[in-house]
Image (cartoon, rainbow, N blue to C red):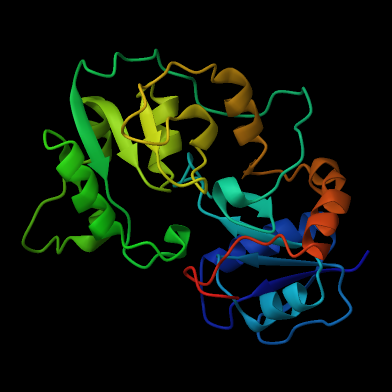
Length: 265
């Protein structure tokens, strides 16, 4: 099997992820603008349509997207998945062997603290075309007591302070999210969570509408599976490549996540 990993031509820290993952899988490394038209698997950091991704999808071969992690963001950790991003990316069933993951905090009563609406970066590809500000306004109308926490990147920190995420999450007893990794962080922290797009990594642990009662899910198996999406020092190569055939079958049927902000890709 010919595996090719694609890097950005400009200096980018995400290229480090590509080099790390590529070395483990024995992949050739080249630039996104130079698709290798006989490769069987294409790897890229970031959920964007590049010439390399266009070529892979036109030929119905699997892609692997490397993206930001749920935990270990300052430790060089990243996530991976076939054919998509987050909850809409495919990964095979994990083996039983434990893998590094944070401890699960006790589950909170959903009405014991603050209800928080967590914003995301407008136009981010994780939104798949949704208007996050309009979504937040709609949620606020339904839950007027909820507090809105904007994504820090949307705040001009020269003029306004941003309260640390950990402080906000610490007093939150119900997190309302769209597709953000905040959903998974909240579930790990024991916070009942609403995730309103299936691209959320918290989808299986959350309720999905504001009319559903928050639930206390069984989180251990979910966290174990999530740990196998996370890559630190080592890449579980056998596990990753063990999902190739199913990923190829899905690709042959055109089952790619939409990385074009909801537009046809």
